Amino acid sequence: MGKVKVLWSKTMRLLVTLFILISVPSYGDFSDNLRVSLDGSARLNNNIAASNTSRIYALGIDTHKVFTSGNGDIGYMVGQLYLTKLSNQTPFSSLFNSPDDKQYVIREAHLNHTSGPEWLPNIRVGHFTLPFGLEASIDTNGRLLDYYHGKNLGTKLDWGLGFNKVLSHVEYEFSYTMGGKNEPKQIDNSYILSGRIGSLSHYDFILGLSFLDAKVDNIQRKRIAIDWQYYWHTWGFLGEVAFGKDDKFQKEWQEETYSLLELHKTSLNEQFKFYGQYIFTDREGDSKNQQVINVGVSYQINAKLELSLSSRQQVNTPESGKKQNLFRLQLRYRY
Amino acid sequence: MKIFIMLALVVFLSPMAYADAYCSLRDPVAQIKQLYPQKTNQLSIVKTVDAHTRRQVKLALPSNDLHFSELGQHTLYVAMKDTEALGYVHVRSEQSKWGLVEIIWALDKNLQIKDFTFQRCRSPKKKVIDNEDFKNVFIGKNFEELKTLLSSDGITANSMLLNKAEDAPELASVVLRCALKTLLITDILWGEELKKFNP
Image (cartoon, rainbow over all chains, first blue to last red):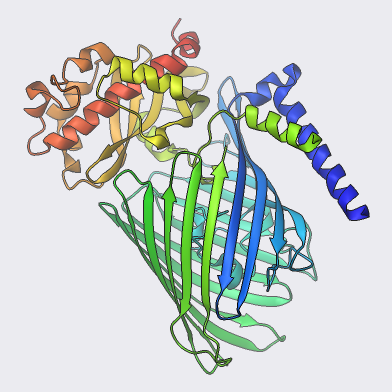
């Protein structure tokens, strides 16, 4: 009962603060250049291999605000806060305490200062996606589509400081974050140093190089990666290949190779998208590599409503003998 | 009950959603610099393209409609050189047989086309944009002047433009429709606010 009261009280405080910021006349300027969406989704996961069906519900607020002065933009802010409820979800993320837990989850929450001199990079502060690989230029927050930052790097988002800039022919982002994942603090001397430099993200062919040196959850990781995106008509061919090593047991480095290939096709009006992914992971010390195929489809019913389906199948039989076999369905509504 | 009232108020304050999460928004910084090399910064002005805007587009350009991704909040950029406004930049997308074509339009302070470049175009004929004769048909023209380049069906370009488009007639019509919608929507939504930059 106490927990419910705390949750209720936090909800009210957040909503009241947001409402005041947006609506009170003295904050009139704050509502200029402000985007606010209510974002709700219901996800059904049918883990056929484990004979388990679970659900994840998320309801949150997605905001984007550009701060300006008479001379131009100063920077922008992104804030995404979601109340996320699990139902029979196993295994569950470290953000939750039980298979039926509910928690406030901060997705992106950062400020990017963009108005420095041309030779100075923009400065980002807050909770943001690690600048590494495909995920750096393709947003997957709240979608079934995934490029597996969390699995490969220990976390997808982290609190810290980043430097970024779009130049005439290349763009880059480097960051130093604390490794606390959803919490703005270091845990057991955790840290993440990561970066990506690539060709401009609106080109038909995009090439990127990334690196990562991190200690998260007491696991040391080092990675270098190359990623690419090639678009032809309504087709896209994407890939990411990463090499590196993990040290889970102090001074025992194990090499790891990870690669992801994706082929996708969109309809002419982009309402319909189909994708297929092949993922290969080879870890030193494991007797077998892991090969997984993801197939997904999304249909943007209108500007607000999207239906997504995906299926994840393991190609080769793992040591445990149980191949991954997961079917997911999600309905997402943004207002 | 209270939480639903609060949520309803928040919902009421966001009239139109954007299909992707806002963290995916990217300013076309490199392209603005290409169109206005002397700019030192840009000033963003966000407005909402809604059903009312859509009706006005249909009225001014019969046979035309807005793609669902064009509804929602969009940014017009004022290219700034210190405190001086150099002109405006507006990105619009137009459906084509090669998927969505996204064009970045540079407009002068009288809402005439100054220049343009593709942000995304997967047509094999996209090099038509390097053809000066083709580009010059657009440059310096306002909405009414460009509208005379539409043929009677209201969708395709007439011979005045097609003669300059070499072997890319379909792409030429896409660029023309995009230019017309850009000028029209810029005027409808941002026109009043932009007057302060052109006293």
